[in-house]
Length: 259
Image (cartoon, rainbow, N blue to C red):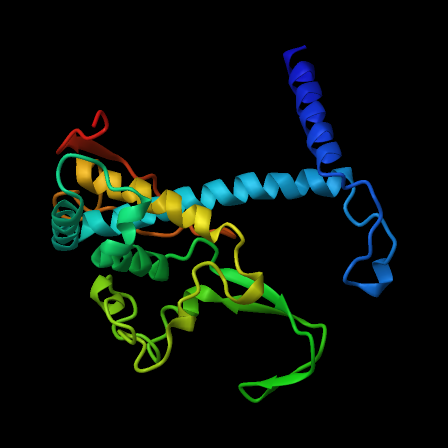
């Protein structure tokens, strides 16, 4: 009975949102074959909504764990980051979104962790015209799969590509050997890049900064001789997530949540 009530409530919510967005009307699609057809009806919209919520939350949560894991495994970077936040923000309040532009090392740490562990390592694009890429003929209409993980660990582009070195992002042409940073693509690239990039970045910035400001982290059952290292193995899947749960005990460093 409870399951039926929940299903009915869920259906009601979807119907309400669907009617609100007025998606039932016909319109012309970008594809001539679909012109005049009701391109987005109730059911695709349901799946689209699920993608927004599940895709946007799980990948952001995974990214936060990767960033925190790298910082815990590199205590010198963790200490340097905390000192930067304390010097810019102070010790009486939490860092907020307005502080991030003034925290270059914080931005570098986030970017470096995202370079090593992009939330979605593969993304696809449809070729709009015949072209040649690296000596290969690519016909129009073919779907190409880009490997963001390999791109951002390519030794031809990055120095020491498998190492966590935030300093590489502190200058404009840091580790890219004179090339521009368009090769940094944790959210994809171009006009079809992840639409939730700004929201995800905001959540990541606020969460990670608070975790660094307020807590020290004692890893439980980790790697290394003393078990103090976070296991950074990757679970198989479409998105990148830790193979083993991030288990640690947060030790209060400074209580700013009541400030």
